[in-house]
Image (cartoon, rainbow, N blue to C red; front, side, top):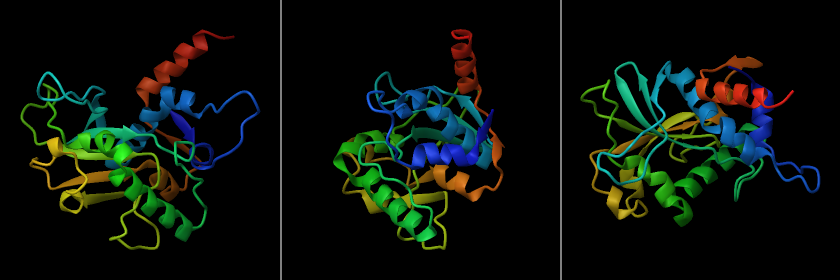
Length: 222
């Protein structure tokens, strides 16, 4: 599925006023394509593939994640968050590199430490049952975000779109039920920063579920 790189970045990273009385279309559109957009960009980066959109816990109860993604011999249990400039507390992402880094560092701190976000974020550590086709595996927790995020401990001219966070730095905020886990770190991917690292105007992404949804919508109109 083809996307226009600059238009997608503008849509999600720039706050704007919509016509009075209509409301913002961002949440509705994200409901159709949001997770698939982030997963498509993640798979493009990893040269990976989605094994399943269902990522269930080992037992009969517990919080679910959004997808299983395989890349080479690695298996990732993935949680997607489409938080963007239009979300609660969201801000327009500036165009200059220092401005991007500043807001990316602020986002990471907010996402990983604010009380309202803790359960939604740290459930990524919960033990999940891998797909039967995989057999025995050691899944890697991967948080796939739309928004720019960056660690203040990793300085570079442009914040990287892929990095890891050591859990020892967040023991004070991780919910108790997720503290005693085998993982020592989580991987973090920023779809916004990844798109900014590319040059092509049009990018082809694996988004089969979103493509089917759009086809279904098209059959209802015209």
